[in-house]
Structures are given as structure tokens and as C-alpha cells.
Image (cartoon, one colour):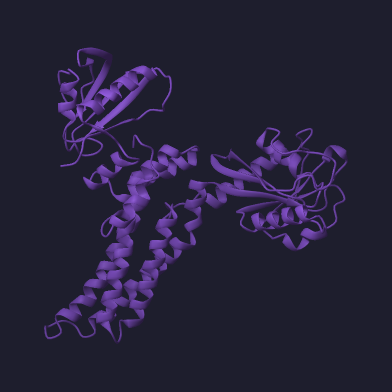
Length: 432
């Protein structure tokens, strides 16, 4: 029998209300030990909590019976007054009664183990708690609602169809079954490989929504990158001076554009220099730009192509700065002034459109974490080997298909999940 656990489900500190969650077989006994007359399940009831003859708080108590709770176990919520002294007193009383503090993610892990959700949905709980933008919340809600699980269930259905055909030829060679039955699994595997390849090609979209879209400012020294950086983040985050090479390192700031999380990076100006510190800054600038999802190629009035000309890609956006100083720009791009704000609204709308283009999609992304991508790669590799073996070695192909099924099952927790549970739930907050 599992322990009975408790944890604070609201942020620590002073507040109007603090919620302590309890879960486990000893929940009702713990409530009784706090002198609580057990209320009807799911009925919020005011009760005075007492321990060793001392009143602790007048609280709102909500009781849940198994399996109709978040964890699938007997559970309860104590809605306390939010003072630290009250929360500490009730927590110490619960520990004295015999309950133990929950580990990170333990409530959701119990929900998974009790069949209340699959592993992908459990991850969505953590993503929803951490969501800071509407896009992150929408993606997490879709995953919690089963959108990602449904995608993998479809993959596994096709895979099991192919596996059944292969197994039939292996297990019943002398029965009245069609010749070369395993070969008929070929079209099913071809379709499945195409679907998985498409999912892997789209893998970055879910990651970018969840972790943030990376935009990097690049350009020559004194092009106005740091001033533009400050204007976009709406604070003086970077030092701006007339001296070329002021920015020596990469400076990051988080912001929201069009409902999407963005990490914006200011970088050192790209130029030839003998200064070892600036050389390192240029190296870091180039490395960050190469890893960016979008680069803003920042150019000042009269800028030559210079040392960054080899860096410009067709999908980059060009931004001409210092329009207040007479800059007119040359060719395509956005003309802005970080000083007066001219053109910034136009640039921000263009960034929002680019984010929507890159991150929005008709289908729910099949990959929202690196763990999902790794499992899809494993499944794809096993399927490719199985496809090549269908004609001559169906027995070996069957083993490869089982390997692919295991890889897909690990995403939702259908099979073989013990070694990934710690990885998934260790990132949760205590009260989840």
C-alpha cells in the first residue's frame, strides 16, 4: 500500500488562500485526526482543523474518493487561510499524524500509475503549469486532452496491423493462409514510415512553442543592434554607446510576440579584429546565429556588406536602423528607428506573422519534447530494417516491428516505461 502524501498546491508565501493537497489510503484517517467530521465527497465544507487540542484554522475541506480523484486514490484538499504560520502549523500536524511530503510530480505520477492519464498527458500537466504564453497553454491543453496520444495510437494501430500479418505467416505456415502474407504488410509500413517522417520533419514546431522561438540580431558593429534589442524588449537591457564593439557577449531576453514565447538575442558586431575578447564575442555571435530559428540582419545607414555578407540567408529579415538620422535603407527590409519608434510596430507585426507561419499548424505536433523525438527515431529505424526484411526474413522483421512498437509505446507509457518515469516526473513542481 502506498504512503499518504501531502503538499502545498499554491505558491509559497503570504496570500488569501493556500491549498494543501492530500492523497493516499490514509487520507480519511488524516482528516479525522484533524478533528474533521468527514464531509460528503466533492462537497466543499467548512471545518475547524485541530491537532493535539489546538485549533489550527477554519478551512474549506473537499474530499474525494477513489477512483474519482486526480490521483485515482482517496484524496482531499484543505483550503486554508494563506498566512505562513497557518500553512506551517497544518503541515507539521500532517507530518505528525504520519503523512509524508510529496516528491516533485508525485501526485501526477500516481495519477499515471492508477490509469487516470497516460504518460504524454502527464507531461502536458507540467507544461500547462509552466505555460507563460497562450500558445504554450493551448499546446499543453491539446496534449492533456489526448491529441498527442491519439497520434501515437494511430501509429501503433498501423504497426500492429503489419505485425499481425507478419506473425500470421510465421505462426501458421501450414495453415490455409495466403502465400507471402508478410509481404502484404509492405504498403502499411510504407505509409507508417511516411507519417513518422512527416512527424520528425515537424518536430521543431512543438519544441519551439514549448521552449521558445529563438530570434538573433546579427550585423556589423554600430549597426544599431543593441538599441533595437532594447526597443523590442522595452527596457534598457543592453548597453548602447557610440563606441564600436561595445557588445562583447550574447545577451538574451524573453518576450512574447503574437502569443508565442520568444528568446531574443543581441550579439557582438561581426568584424575582423585583433582583440581576443572581441574575437570570442564574434565567434559566439556566429554560433548563436547558426542555431537561431530566425535571424534579423541589422544594418545601419550606408553599411557595407562587410564580414557578415556570407551569413545572410534567404529567410532572414533585414532591418535598416537609425531612420531618424537619415537612414533610408537599400532594397528590401524594414526601416526603423529605435530612438523615435518609427517602423517598430511594422517590424513587430512582421515577426508575429513569421511566428504564426513557423509555429501554427493544422495538425497537433507529434513531438513536443526531445524524449518524443528520440522514440520516433528509434521506431523509424526499426521499421526501415523490418521493411527490408519482409521478403526474405519475416521472422527477423517481426522482431524489428516489436522493437518499433515498444519505442512508440514508451511515449504514452503503454509499455516499458519504468526507466523513463524519473525523467518525466522529476521536472514537476511538488504539488503536482
